Length: 309
Image 1 (tube, helix red, strand yellow):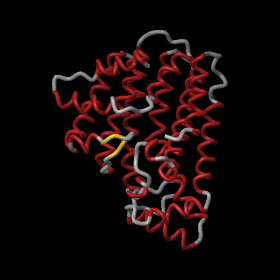
Image 2 (cartoon, helix red, strand yellow):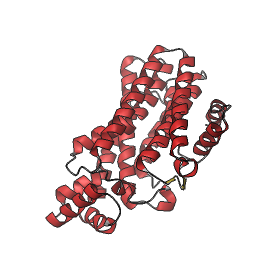
Image 3 (cartoon, rainbow, N blue to C red):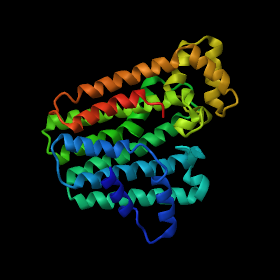
């Protein structure tokens, strides 16, 4: 991970001072480095011992960071990981344009690996993520979104980059087609579990630990699984309250919505779905030979569900 950080800082360099300032601020603001770690661990699990895994791990982190920059502008967020968002500090224009710089730098780096399959995986993933962002935008303030619509957004917007990260490790390690698909499926299920837990933490997390405001999703009118569950299983009054909050956005009735979410067991139900996804992810690792890298992938699966931030 130290070697990865060195690659990230080297590749962030630009003669344009504002790009360096914004990019350094975002990369230095913390974060779990979960997606790049998946590239490193999956490549290691397949016996890869070159250096391209560091480049591709940085590519994955740059793509992720670019989506965060754009997300925070779209969502009008002012807090992430306990720090001011880049758009709050530098303005929307700088955030969008530096996000574009990170995307284009990522594509420069993946071309340097000189592997058409690597480029195809990352190009497809980036396009799918963009589709997921638009799907989420279309779903905002729509209280009639069903579970499958919601899961589709997760698979596109979040899980696709996890899937790409673990597939890249398989490609670098020259995994046979079946094992590569298992690694990709591991990433997809893990990413789905990870986002489900994020959606739970929006109603139950400690703001100091999560680094974001409770109820951010509700304020933006996002119909996440806890809300969908509360509408399906709550009383008519609870369902109407949640529906109104989604359609109107804002935090005006956050306490009432939180009561409905808790009373209907929505958080426990969502965590149960996340746990199922994490178990499916773990099952995909059975074909990997024993190694510290496989052990790390197992630990990440457990962390994704048990985390509190």
